[in-house]
Amino acid sequence: MEGPSPPGFTGRRGAAGLDEALPPTLHPRLRRLALAAAEAVAPAWDAVDRLVQANCARVWAAFREAGVAEHHLLDGTGYGLDHSGREALDRLYARLFGAEAALVRPHFVSGTHALAACLFGVLRPGDRLVAVTGQPYDTLAGLIHQPGSGSLADLGVSYVQCEPGPGGLPDPGRAADAAAAARRGQRTVYYLQRSRGYAWRPALDVAAIGELCGLIRSQDPGAVTLVDNCYGELVELREPTAAGADLAAGSLIKNPGGGLAPAGGYVAGRRAWVELAANRLTAPGLGGRLGAYLGGTRLLFQGLYYAPLVVGEALKGACFGAWLMAELGFQVDPAWDAPRADIVQAVRLGSREALVTFCQGLQAGSPVNAFVRPEPGPLPGYGDPVLMAAGTFVQGASLELSADAPLRPPWVAYVQGGIALAYARLGWLSAAQALADAGLVRL
Ligand SMILES: *Cc1c(COP(=O)(O)O)cnc(C)c1O
Image (cartoon, rainbow, N blue to C red; front, side, top):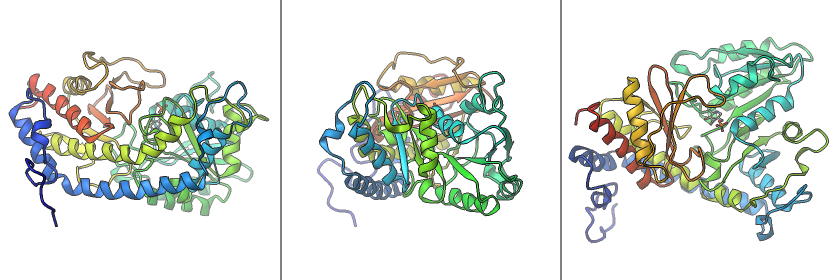
């Protein structure tokens, strides 16, 4: 039952007060669509509200179990030996991930670096890497294959890729075959990517990840399963490590940083593997026991505390964007009311021009560098030129509203984030307006 409406509001939950919140320059049809969207997607937003409450309860419990104290928020210097904040942060993530151990570090330069620490930490010459979910995210190509760079291939680690089944989801039969082919004494890391990456496929949910990990272990008892958890944290009620994955890794300038973490990455999972990843981040013999947090640990703690809320806002923004762009005639994935296992919203723009215009419009709706027109360019770790709209406070932080697009057919923008629904909505509308202004969509 709806309660009484505050004065001046329509009483319809979604669109309440929204008209005043839209820019006066917005095209009248976009204004009508924005109001209609708020009503249409209200059921999805309600579901997000329930998710946020449950995930706040998880984070709250983890803080208390980890015994987070005021002195943990201070910074350290030099070796950072016995820095209690670092240990508390590791405990906190381990609790939240239902894992034996975690390694949460600003010294990881990115999510790719955290994943690399896992792979290079665990694998030895003669071992195997099996990509269970098809071709891994673009930035991993170099560390797997690049000759002469110290890649896994250079170290004599063999590579097997399981092509996805129908609908882009992993094929359990192929995963089982790859696991059954494990040789005695040869360790295999099975790499599962939760988010869609730059592919037109659904994200993999935690239940499916858990089933795949169980299947793989039944065929190869020595298996080490590693989940690329980027963009998936706090989108469901548990993390892959609580569902049977041995290791998960991700970036702190995505979901778990809550929009506050200034840099870093994390690894969580079984203690033995987390320790090997720590040895790779620092050096064998040093592991996770040292490393100073020059900027302090506060924003890493506080960011995780806010993260369920901010992830919820990002999910609501994605539902809004999916509805809006579908109304404007574009293919979107997922649909506004489909289940989500990551925060990414893919929109198929259909032409290079529309893709570039869309991303430039999104940038124009950002708080920082709104006046900049992003152009496609080379980016370390990516094969194709990439267009990135990221008018963000933390450089490249994609829990803030952002869009990335490798410049290749079928010309898909991968949009994510938005610190608050209201900001995300303005960004999506700015992108739609840019398409209209360029005559690329008829209003
Ligand atoms: C972001 C991301 C990564 C890591 O990217 P970085 O830019 O190195 O943090 C890896 N996999 C997926 C699916 C991602 O979304």
